[in-house]
Image: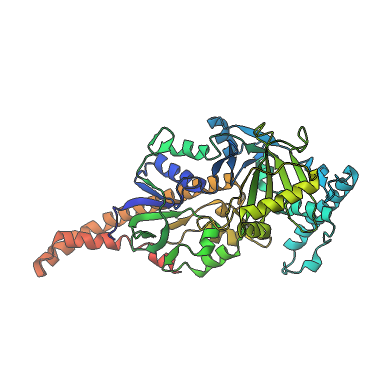
Amino acid sequence: MESQNRCSVIIIGAGISGISAAKVLAKNGIEDILILEASDSIGGRIKKQNFGNVSVELGAGWIAGVGGKECNPVWELAAQSGLRTCFSDYSNARYNIYDRSGKIFPSGVAGDTYKKAVESAIQKLRTDQNTSDVSDVSIYPTTPETPIELAIDFILHDFEMAEVEPISTYVDFGEREFLVADERGYEYLLYKMAEVFLFMSDGKILDNRLKLNTVVRELQQLRDGVKVTTEDGCVYEANYVILSVSIGVLQSHLISFNPQLPRWKTEAIEKCDVMVYTKIFLKFPKKFWPCGPGKEFFIYAHERRGYYTFWQQMENAYPGSNILVVTLTNGESKRIESQSDQETMIEAMEVLRNMFGPDIPEATDILVPRWWNNRFQRGSYSNYPIYANSQMVDNIKAPVGRIFFTGEHTSEKFNGYVHGGYLAGIDTGKALLEDMKTDNDRETDNGSVLQPLLALTLSQTDIVAGVRNCDIHTQLFHCNNKRGLTEAIL
């Protein structure tokens, strides 16, 4: 298929990074952009769905890092948009730990176990940072063995302390977290950003510069731009490309590069961990779980780590919704995705009956997101390994020729967070603008220096060979636009 009209910038992926990058470009006068999104809506891993007569967040659900001296930019966007949120207090979850017989562990036992686990986790992180052999589990201070130890270890390492201390998000923006509980969804923030530069009507984007259901499969570096080929055979060309897909997609090789990405780039991409985070929603005809202050979260202690461990009741967010959410991660997430929703409901109901008794009502509906098997996401968020250094981070986000990389995985301080993706998009947009300015300045300088020489060459050539002016100007254009291909193969 023939190439479509060329534009200045193609942005691949309409998540929060792609949209924020596009907004920066448009604000600075770069309006001939094209956004190619593989799915049927913008938002990426920010995605809502109606379930049990309310709007639930399948992916990102919280605004983390609120209440500090510096304002979280996503919290600021939420305030400007009037987005409804609810404060989430995790501190009491450790005192709502159920064993398999339905008994809650005494607060003293739970508190002591939690304290020891925190001390062990901190020591483990420090040890990991100071050892070259991160696979040697014998160096870890303690190994959790009992159900309560396994449950708390899961909470610490898969939730609270999945990052190396100190956590930049909480240091910079504050330690409070707010759950998005708005019928318009978390994605409403992206639509508010998009309406600044894309034509919208009745809350829908009608601008032909956004193409949904458009799966990019190949990026080819040209002498003076990038050619983008989609799954349905369409071809687009641009002076530059911003690649705003997840780290999981980069690792899956859904998109091929011609020429191939340099080794330093691929090695950095492969070293970044991909976390899978699955929130399973269950709808019930009535409540049977405790509600009230300090009861939003509760924990199930099982012999298998991460087995339906972390629960949340949605009454604070949506009173009367009768919805429970249980969160699984990584191995358990992948296992759940490979089985039917009915099998998952049977497992979840068995766990709930262990905690609350055999007479609780059966769930009337279940919703199981599948982020790992979604080929346009391949996971939930990035997580830098303990041994990551600044060079690895720089390599992940560094442009290759005229292809710029963005996304939460390119944020050194805030990777894994919505505000990380938002700020990364802004940074990439600014970096591209600077690069475009440099290119324009170079072309201007080259033109001013070469014009007198061209005039002389032109008169001589016309006499000798009769070459036309247009041929010489065409040659000059190509000479001044060789940037990109050489850098791409370094």
